[in-house]
Amino acid sequence: MTQVSEIMTRDVRVASPQDSVQQAAQCMKDLDVGSLPVCDGRKLLGMITDRDITIRASAAGLSPTATRVSEVMSPELLWCSEDASAEEVLRNMGDTQVRRLPVLNADKELVGIVSLGDLATNANAPAAQALRDISSPPAR
Image (cartoon, rainbow, N blue to C red; front, side, top):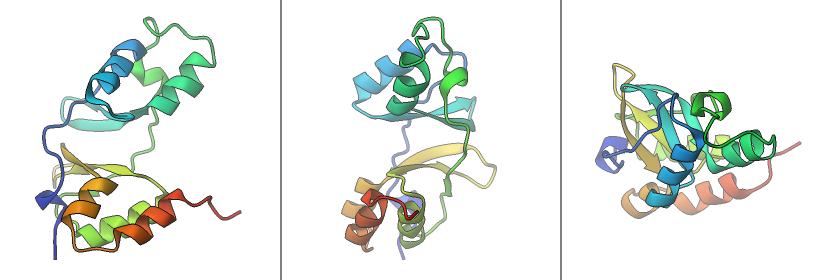
């Protein structure tokens, strides 16, 4: 059984809660990603997404240079452990409709990030079903 630690991306760029929204957006642009973990050292505090920046900062008329990441980030901490099985993580991603998860070690420190793409190309798991689960509208 494949573990997340075998397929995750280890060299993860993060945002600091004190970074400006503009700095986070520039980092996302440079990396061609839509989200960044927000960390204090190696401690995960939340995630900031391109949607957070658009909805919570831009739409509210906040200055991208004066607004801090901590003001607009998503503090909900969805994550997985590095020793979790790829199959378990795929199921959880489908259930919560997310495409990437921060990966934490036993000390709850950020050690990587795993994406649906990582799982689809590297794990012996039903990624197509997970993608359908993630992409379908939530039941009401």
